[in-house]
Image (cartoon, rainbow, N blue to C red):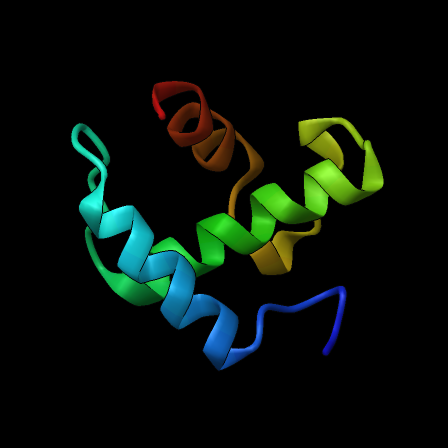
Length: 69
């Protein structure tokens, strides 16, 4: 199990739980997975949102979605 990326099994479990929550819009599963991975990266590293690697997406978009959730 990698601490950097979500495995397919982990993602399946997370997605199933997210779909059960009221008020949480999942949207496209691939985009949502990228968002969750970005949030986990921030939480694990303790870094600022602006330092988020571009491979996770635009830091401001990820931050705004995180704030809405």
